[in-house]
Image 1: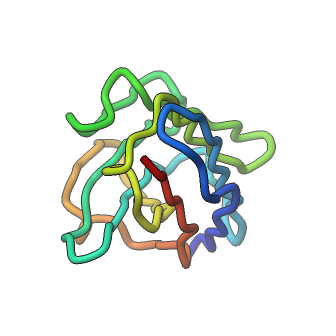
Image 2 (image 1 turned 30 degrees about the horizontal axis):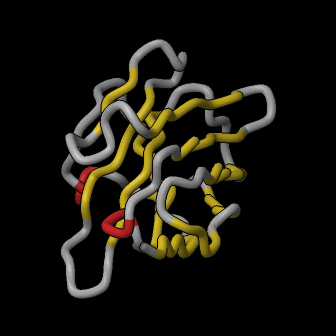
Length: 124
């Protein structure tokens, strides 16, 4: 099973940008779906984005579409989430996830590996 460690969270003002990183280890990451979920205070877990193992297919949640970009570097076993035009409603703990499959899904129960999360706080 792959182990995931997130980094890059922080406290920023609305309109700012942040780049989250996810380091994977434990097994080859080149043939697994990777993605991001988030959970804000008092909210349910929300799908943010996911990327195919080749990087050629990406999928975004409606609330981040056009502002966030997911990417991965299989040679480095890394995945990234570039977050632009951040809003206070983006405040959440962001979790890196992985799924040994070829199809992107948005159900959190379908992702078998989770990181511990990194906090993003956006002030107005």
